[in-house]
Image 1 (cartoon, rainbow, N blue to C red):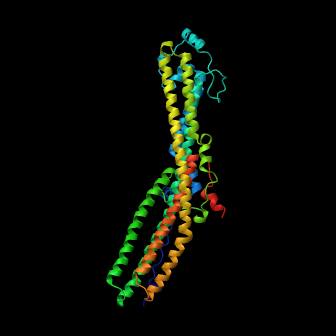
Image 2: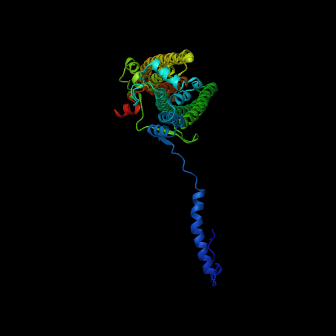
Image 3: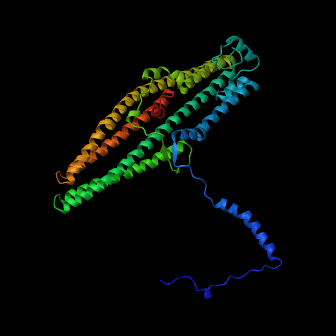
Amino acid sequence: MESLTLPLCQRPTATVFSPGPLSWIRVVVLAVLLHLLLPAAVRAASPPSAPKASVSLAELLEAAAVNNLQLISADAQVQRYNTRIALIDKLNEPLLAFYYLDFPVGNISLGEAERINQAQAGPATKVNTRSVRGKILTGRDMIENQALWFEYRAADLRLQVVSQVREAFFKLYFLDKTIIATENGIATLAELTQSAAAQYAVGNITQTDVLNLQEQRYRLKAELLEKQQQRRELATRLNYLAARPITSPLDPFLDKDLGYDDLVLPRYTAINLISGLFQNRPLMKGYQALGGRFRAMRGMVKMYFNRDLQDEASFEADSGLRAIKAEGTDFYNEVSAAIQTTMTDLTTNRELADLYGRVLIPQARQLYQLSLADFEVGRRDYQAPLTALLSLFRYQEKYYQALTAFQVDMARLEGLSGIALNTPVVAAERY
């Protein structure tokens, strides 16, 4: 092989550059320009840092609490109505209070008529204990209770967003486990198909048997594609809830894998959770605040509306109060039923996860290994290891479904009850 090195006499000689009087100035200027412009160009060409793929539940919850647009909008509504409370103190109280609540302000009595109305109505007791203006009912009470409704509604929405993030996180976390199990099943079927092809070559099985194995492998591939599509949808949903870029890579991360022995039932009974709804669920307090708004409105109508229109205005206030009572009661009944159902589902899913994880999967794995060994030495046909393998795969899928359902129910139960239960992360730290 000839050398690529040129002979010494043929090597090109370097040209020596001898700068003229102005060349040094040009060199210095060029160096300065490169120093100033090159870093900026490099920075401009550098792509923005992408969110990391491996994300913990705590990081997603923190991102949602700060950046979720639904929560930002709800907080802005709270600020809006709290600002109106301060305006009531500075401007014409009754007129402004009714105007803020979309009431027909053209029928409000002023001057001598207002004095007569208030004298006949007498002082009304306040319905909102947060007021600091004494015991006599004023327009501030209506606005305060309306502001309280938005405040409690925002708090309840924050609770529901946390629940939704937890649900989506654990659905995605265990779906990834299922996808890995499916991929492993496809690889194992491929190996089994190769073994069957060897058996077919020596005449132990038919071509139909080999094709049957291939069909089962392609079925798993189709299921894998469906699961991967489901994963993309879940990741998009979770990114949306956490106010992350929709297409950001997302790999749910936990410090410890959760298994059937990590499923701890809530330390509260369904009766405990239902009895605490009025104290722990913000929206229940919100309905009470709306009821206070309409009770305050009824008292204000008697004090400020023209006498000939008080009956109609009072009827409107009473109708609003009845509607809020009915809506609040229906909400309480609906949440109570959901708590009872979810608690029952929790117990069932825990038992299913224990059955699949502790009993059925180990037995199915052992049965597959034994039948595969018999098949490879010709003592059994291909159907025995195939049936055992498919049973093992289905049990694994059912196992992850039970784990998912349990964690999702726990997240929903926290959203329904309004209190933090023994969450999966806490349960994992106990083992």
